[in-house]
Image (spheres, one colour):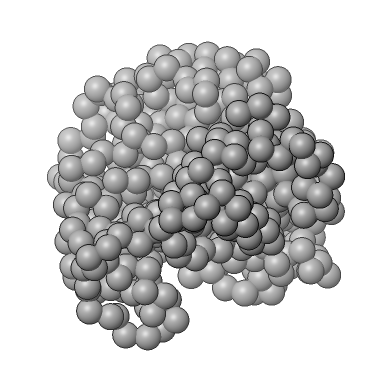
Length: 274
Length: 233
């Protein structure tokens, strides 16, 4: 994945404003499933956006961690979409989303075991072979952990990437959320991820529910996540950066201002000290 | 792997509940997005009750949550069932495959001798809808920010066509003979078969005039797709 700079998740509310340009957004990330439709407005706007900006496809349905067979109808549709729009990257999540015929429409956690590493890595390789492209996997927020973990979350993520030869889309907010929910040191997480595996960073807001943080994408990036981001961008300076917002979506200009903040903090001389 | 036992400490219950709440909330939100006017019409309390019942009875088998509410209408009767079917249909037309509309200029190039056997093609986004209530009137009123009309069942079914033009959804009600003619076209019938459908109470010339009038209107509205199905009926 080449150096793309600072991008935003493209949402229908912003199609028109995005196309008007003049907004300092270097590229757009699109939710793959929103464009797996026969025709109409979403594809029309994606065509227009793609004419002027690089895009990356970010899916939520690969379910790469599930024990259900890979959904090749889905992968075929993703491959078709990728042929049409030539994205800079195709990504999904390091999780499972359902089993059997049931889709939970959620990013469910995996057990951090050697068996799971082998299982996921084999499926990532199969996916990459089918798509003809290396994929990025994103670490997810979680509220539960499986018993019998043989490694920490960051070791699991690094091991899967290594075994599958895929890249990591490191969601800094998810690292922070999990560091609170599972009581670990977020900076140890970042320091343990191999530099060469991280091709993209995600930033987003979260909310609090009792003792836990929930990955809701409905608020600005908070100060604690900005701090962690500075550490992350110093360690992974070539990673493309994206801000995601899926709820309480503000006018595009507000997100552009938040993106400016990501750009400014990337340029600050934090270095390796953090 | 999903059969593994999850962490069994005292926080297990509340942690699992986060996923359970999120599952329900996400599906309720998907239904509210697909059925905004039905939600307005029912009010939030009744809508949430209907959504909760649907979610309990209907695990999602959809890859995209966008299609989760496909059979939500079955939980309603009368106007509300019609309203649900209507909103779902609008969503289908919104996402239907792109198509190009036939122009009068293109049709004018057809050899007059070929007309009887001519088989026109409906625009790919066009869908039919029939209601036996004032659902569409309610949908329009609520969508315009007006108060909900009282639900009303009607004696005669009303036919509608819904289609997309220039990325915008269009719709209108159609008289009975026009509805029959469009349904005939949908089967791939020839122009002469179309005239036969319209012949009730008219002579052959009258039916041909009615067919030509309708066709001109359909093309003006973008109801006919470019390209002919074939020259033989």
